[in-house]
Length: 472
Image (cartoon, rainbow, N blue to C red):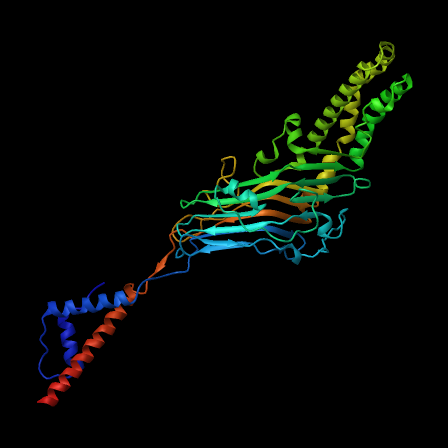
């Protein structure tokens, strides 16, 4: 800032005050007075920062997005926003109240074999929602089964649990999904989990990470495709053997049941994961559609079922007389040698199931979305921005980007083209990095301030000079 010449100032004051004779002032005193007054105004008019989001977090339990132009449906999450002025952190703790959804929330099912309301597809137990935002730019969010929060985030706080559930999940289940009819649909999918949760965390340095948890996941896959495939194993292997053994004199109660006389299979995910050569449910790579593993799981289940059935038959043969055992030997050998051909026919009959599943639904777990360069997926790689999104510049006054971790994204229709249901979402950011400050006492306002000060000084000289003239 350029301070006006004091000589010019004094001459101006002479003209303004109309005082006869020149006002002679010590330049140092005048300059000192101006600076002092300026400093006083500086203190009186502090800087004002533009509104900034230093940190924010959002825990949201449920969101339904339609892809036909209809507005999304969601329950308000626990949103915590800190502008940098609140310490130690802003906390939002808002459990989900599913009662506001209603039991007859219509879905645009189109040509799909889906029920007419959401309650027929998904049932959710009580869910917690929590968000915390600190003034240093760090934040964390959580939604899902309340007891999971300490283990996911490493904090001792347990959020408030909701008091209402949506539908009635199975016993000891936090969530249940039901799609299709096992008797009439090409494919049907059932899934339950004893826990359902997700968390997201952002450090003060802007590093964003997330975690998820699905507890004790059990799935049931049914429908006419898998029913037909299972029927090939039943008719070519199991039924002929059981019929032969009963004909030789084996009691039906001493023989194992036919594992393939069904239209569906039920399994615990983690129990079959090692056999099928797939990840455990809580070790999935980011954005994994677990239904893509179903053909592998069914094949592993069938092999395991055959192995268990064969062992049970061997135990039954060992328990009878040598004569009866000798009679059973040829039938048992035929069963063993016929397994390879039967399994080949089974796999051929199962081939259409992948397309049928993709047309019905997708269940994506460990869903992660972020548009910040500092965002890290659970496998240590950089986050992939959502489609159509770009990574913003990380310069002064710009956004750091948002990161969202979800436990489950349930897509309905071919490639999720009908709707998407998000369960247990946690979002941190976007934050404003080094928000631009707009001080009141800047270069422009300083000039105005000096003019005001000069006018005040001029007024003081004017009043003083008039008093002296009147006194004379």
